[in-house]
Every structure is written in structure tokens, then in C-alpha cells.
Image 1 (cartoon, helix red, strand yellow):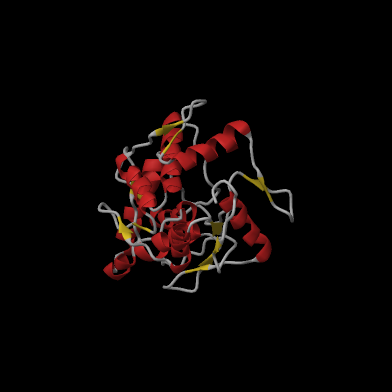
Image 2: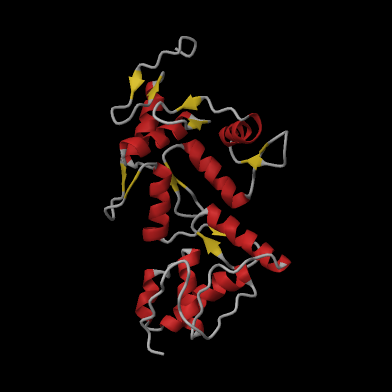
Length: 256
């Protein structure tokens, strides 16, 4: 079947089809949420052993697949192939039949098509959130329910729920050191703790729910501020003035 291209085993929940029944069984775990393979360093779980192997490289920093055209290195061969197609060859063989979007991978096109159909097949079992992609659901669970933060900064004690957050944090820290980091908005606060609370709108940070019961919001906000803002923005200084922000209007409910 590999030579003929025949794919008799089809998923009954999406358009995935394969030549092997075992591959279909693995694929179905994406819909059921079954993840029997556990990481021994964090609470990550995978539906396939290969995904767990790739995940563990995030802890070790191992990136064995190097691009021969630039300094990029990947944790999986598939990621390297996608990198080359998107960055070097420009190859995007999968075309959307409803718009001019083209993808380097079939799964990217499937995810894109859900924008047209409105389909969101991945549902959170803890709330009413639904996602178009399994990765979106995983990110949601990490940030809203598990509070897992497996990505650690090597420059400070900052940790992130997503690798992209860590990259932005490190990049912001480097820009601050070079003096090139711009102000985020025109918001000004009458009190430092108001600014710390406001900064969470830019960073996306939310305190662990267990901290809600400390009855010491000043300490909670100070912890968040010190953990992210100082490390990332360095010289960002609060000022005594109006509390309007050009990104959003931040309501201050605390007594001054």
C-alpha cells in the first residue's frame, strides 16, 4: 500500500486516512485525549512514544537535527523538514480550495480549513473551551487548569507555560540590556502595585489560584512583577499620573 498510495483505514471524526490500522489507532488518540506515555520530569503526557521522546528533548536541550543551510536545529526530523520548506525552499504543496492559503504540511491545511468550517473538535473536559487544534487545547489546559510551567529561563528564575513565552521573555531581557526595548503602552499608575497588576495584561501572567487565598494581593503582584517584568524590561519605571492605557482601559478598584 505504500507504493500504491492506498489508504483504506479512515478516521470517522476527520479526513485522516492511513495504510496501517496501527497508525489509525494512534491517530484516534488525538480525538479521545488518551495519552498513556508519561514524562518522568513533568506532568506531560503523550499519545505516542515518539512524541514523548521529542518532548524530553525540551528538558535536555537536545536538538539532533541540524539544518545545513542555517543555524537552526530541531528536536524532530519532521520539524526540520517543515523548517526547510518554510524558510528555504518556500515549498507549500497543500493548497486551500477556499482561499489562497498554502501549507507545508497536510495537518497545517486541516487546521486552517477549520477556520472556514468553524469546526472545533477538541474540547476541554474541565470547562466549555473548544479548540481547532490539539496543541491549542494543550496550551489552554496548561495555562488555565494545570499551571504547568516546564520552560525555565537560564538567566533568571522565570518559568513559562509555553516555549514561545520563554523566547519572548529572553528576547525582551536581551533588548532591555541593549537599551532597545520600547515602552509597551502609555499607561501610568499612581501606585507601583497598580502598575504591577496592569503589566499582567501585557505578559499574560495570572497568579496561581492557590495564591488567591493568601489575602495579600500586594505580595502576589510583587511576586509576578519581580518574576517577569524586572527580568524582561529592566528599566520600566512606574510614574505618578493618570491611569489610562492606550492598549486598554485598566479599571483600578483598589483604594488609594
